[in-house]
Length: 121
Image 1 (spheres, rainbow, N blue to C red):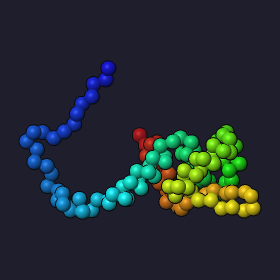
Image 2: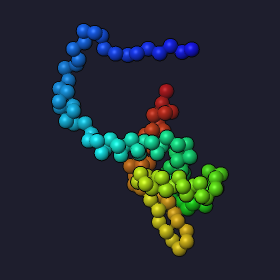
Image 3: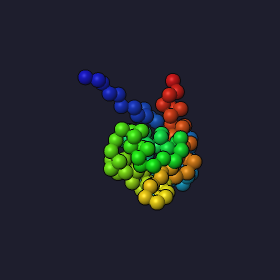
Image 4: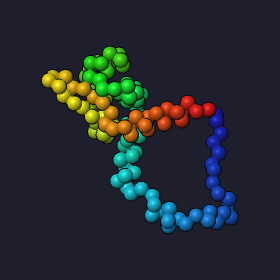
């Protein structure tokens, strides 16, 4: 059984010299925190990460994504709907075909920075 260690301040700790009121005032509001948590939750699923990875290379239709991910179109569409709800991807319809791409450049940037961080040793 692994032992866990609780990290805490010493009993006589009086805190840092930080202006906690200033920090509190600069912290995110509740709505922003909820939206960010939802956004990161979206990346908590490997299938959705794979979809984002594929879309960093350009716009793709549901068929393309289903082939790349070796999944049914229905399952891919379900994940794309989730990603649309959190504004990570957007869609464009041309006739009966729906094309998906990253919602904006920030999505790709966050994806690349995250990838660099997890590969950093």
